[in-house]
Length: 130
Image 1 (spheres, helix red, strand yellow):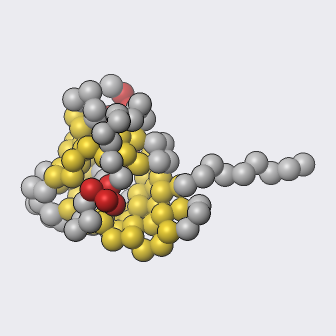
Image 2: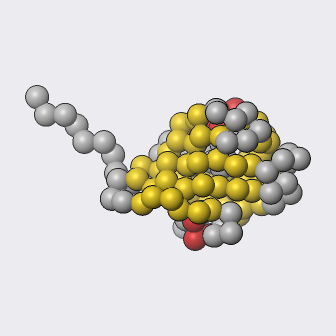
């Protein structure tokens, strides 16, 4: 599946992230991995959080709305889609990636902590009136 490869090559290639139909059991990553994710800001438009994933650590299948990820560390992650496809992605500090809505599982397959900021959109941008 091409979207996962694009995501992986774009993200970490992010932490954390496949445009896909969300399975019923997909979960909010903040609720699923509270020891890895710290919410910094949340309002009616965005949720901003810090993510830290230690080498060898996994975050089970979860979903994100459209979002951007800002990498704060050198990172190497393995991302798995609901249909079982996997992709490896790497990122350097300062890399910024955009992703549409996605469902995936994440694993830190590198030797350093994955550290990133994620900004999730809660509502689509309003169209400008003419």
